[in-house]
Length: 120
Image (cartoon, rainbow, N blue to C red; front, side, top):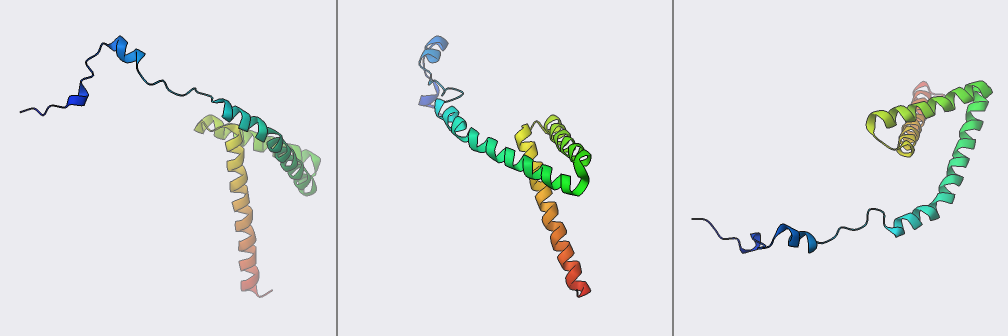
C-alpha cells in the first residue's frame, strides 16, 4: 500500500514551474563589491608594508641579490600552490606566511629549550 504524499505533486507544467520558481540571488551582490572597495586601500597598505619589511629583512640577511631571489621564490611557491590546489594567490601567500611564522616560532622555542637545557 503506497502512502500518499500530497505535497509531492505540484500539478503543473514545467513551464509554469519555471515561471513561478523562486529566483536565486544575484551572483555578485552590490554590498559585497562596496565592502571589497572599502577594504582595498587598507589591504594595499598592508601588502606594501609587508613587502617592505620582507625586503629589509632579506636584505640584511642575504644582501640585495639574495633578497630578489627569495622574493621571486616566494612568488613562485605561491604560484605552485595556486596551480596544484586551486587556491587563490592571496590565500597561497597567506598560507606561506602562516607556515613561515609557525616555523619561526618553532625555531625560537627550540633555541630557548636548547639554551635552558645547556644552562646558559
